[in-house]
Image 1 (cartoon, rainbow, N blue to C red):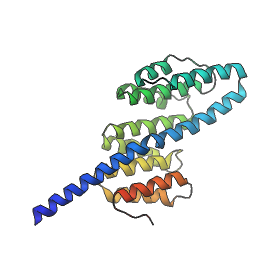
Image 2 (spheres, rainbow, N blue to C red):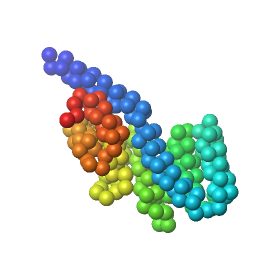
Image 3 (tube, rainbow, N blue to C red):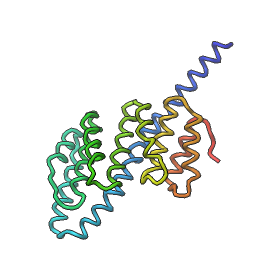
Image 4 (cartoon, rainbow, N blue to C red):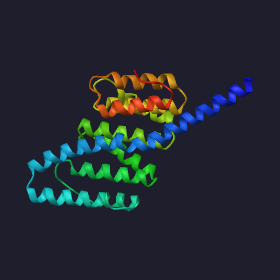
Length: 216
């Protein structure tokens, strides 16, 4: 009987992890993509307002063109070839290159770019924190859950710009390492935080149900 119970527990855990992986694959791009687009759109709006219309349109068109390249490696190279000199467009290009490199499986290239952005003292906090967050997500996607957890610790501190997204990454990492109690605590933090968005709360609730916990 003990062996049967142990076997059932192992199967249940594998089912949980499989479902969590599928949920992460489904929602992972949105977790960071929404943040990137939000920050990028705000930066682009400010830059567009402060620069000559023609120059802004040309650079915006170049960024848009690079983002539409189908092959991920070619897309990364397309972003790398851009040399915008106004506003935050150069940072958008670097983020685009890193994201495409990560999609292509070139994790070292992507992490190197994120590390460069994070270490640049001239880059505003909203960008360096975003680079750190995307680097942590890349670690999680690569299966290095322990490193992902370590990377999210400073990002989940009070006052950090992407605190709840970092906590979401922590919760998913806890599930993947089998620490369901810590995962539940993290998801509940997201659900109960007054600054949490309905979209973020909805994801947290669905993730909780995937581990057999009904949100309050």
